[in-house]
Length: 147
Image 1 (tube, rainbow, N blue to C red):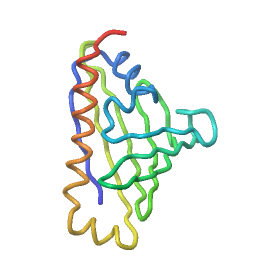
Image 2 (tube, one colour):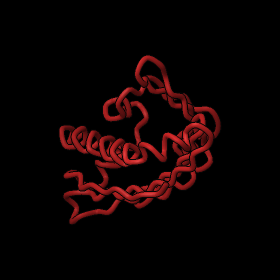
Image 3 (cartoon, one colour):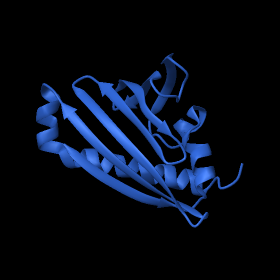
Image 4 (tube, helix red, strand yellow):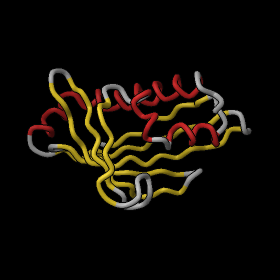
């Protein structure tokens, strides 16, 4: 499964990245994030891995993030692995006249086992969740326009 979502965030790209690239702020816009734990490498840098734990329903979802490409201010790409799911997220940040940022997120999901069935039946929810997360970041960033 592969798709692209985009959103315009009405803050300058420098501020956008300051908020986006700060793990201590992730819980403000990533619904259900319980913890972010660096595992290997320098957090946020190419090749680094981190464990993210999210509250999902009555349980938790654990995933490992691997930074694939960090070329800020333009690109930030990572892979995210959980049981039965491998997601590659390629993110582009486009400056719009120094006043706003266009965020383009291209996602590729590889599903295995039971998750393959879930993807076939409910694939549209992956797109919907990606957009909800992007909208949550937009709301957070626009309500925190200055440091």
